[in-house]
Image (tube, rainbow, N blue to C red; front, side, top):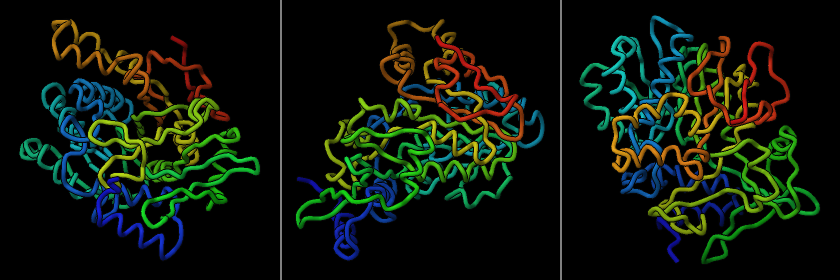
Length: 397
């Protein structure tokens, strides 16, 4: 059995033997982001056909171009002149920035001239990859900069859009299971030869409060993940946005679906060389770990910071609203290009698995093409109340 990177396994074992079992969130943080050995912190192919998994950005550039089209449309309502900032968080290989900015270069040079593109990236290896990929754009004078975290962005300083694609699913999660006497948290121990799971009372009262706020009660025996870091991230974003949008693209569900009784074992998955890994406790530091996003809790955390929900949709409806169908007109239906774009829309795949949550602050809810066709009822996110003037207008397909 390949436990993973020897240096990382040694670090984790030493920590457990010194301090006792650790939360799964601490284990996942180390597996993905340990400065020396973490999956995302070391050089090597991670994303794409040459890596362990792929994203919509690896499928076809049209995805990034249409996201850019939506942002440009929103910019007219946010600030029609003067500096406009896109803050992309967790930009991976830099494909979203590259394709989006190249489309602006081709189609919207006036908008590009007033655009500042800021990438927030904690991984030095990823920063180098992004800089190489965006070198032609930076050499051409496009305003692109990097910061390691949101602490480098001042409060109330951003007019524009906070953008992320498959960021939140990679935040470390706590794992919980409902037992007859209440919630138990799953901790990680070491038995001398392998990592083991140990159940104990939840370490933080925030874990009980998480389910209380969304009105969810797990069934006995049901496991679930809780992403407290995602809530803190959303609060940080809300604090830094003065006027504009937060666009969060990821796979996940509204809370009622994510924590439905039918989902008995949660959503935690490992990805290793394009196969789903059976266990988070093998290939540690060498495989991706991920859990589906709870968009209801993200929306509620945003409301605490003055972020109102503009809309919530899936990738299929988002891309159709932005005109992806028109791009098929000149393509051979059997061409690889056409097949790739169909993959983005597949109803039993990327088209419905991926969701888009858009929130606004400091402005009225803008009319956005990507939200024209919405597949969810008004109360899909089950938010307790919305302020007048910012309805989550939605219709069933």
